Image (cartoon, rainbow, N blue to C red; front, top):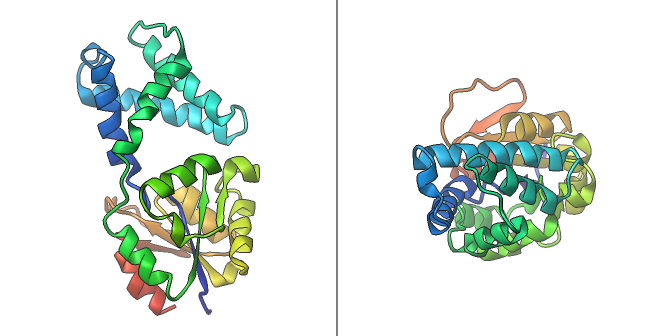
Length: 233
């Protein structure tokens, strides 16, 4: 096998979504005078994330538009503390306005992408909306690594782990699946989805969960490990 290209997930793979979201959510709730309505900051974060995951899953399933799932999250979250927002869109906009302050790439992302870009063509396959992810990649200084090879589920029409979105990423690189690797942090959605689509699948397990991988899944614990592993493929 000759590996020629690598596709990446964005959130919690090259972009520290969990860490940056934690900082912004807690700041926003404090600014809105809502943080003390929860038993603890961690409880507030848990509810925010649970509601986000449920409504985002509806977006990925095509039941809600991207902006619609944002508003649903606001209404559900505030309802739990007895608040009826006059304008859910304005509430979310206040949250989003300060979000980029906290956005950050993982420390290993830029140097690894720079070095890999000397040997491979690079791209992105993400379960999100293109405009949103482009804004994120620009803010964290990584967009130039991928050129036009960015595929997002909203525009593609279906989400990972559907094989067609991985194949669309390969097509953006001008490569066949067997010439392409995929790197993502979600075991089922990213790793198994990519493997089943015929790509070389890397599961990025930064937290060292200990989950045993199935056949055809390569486990790495940092992006830096890709430099050595891909040199041997």
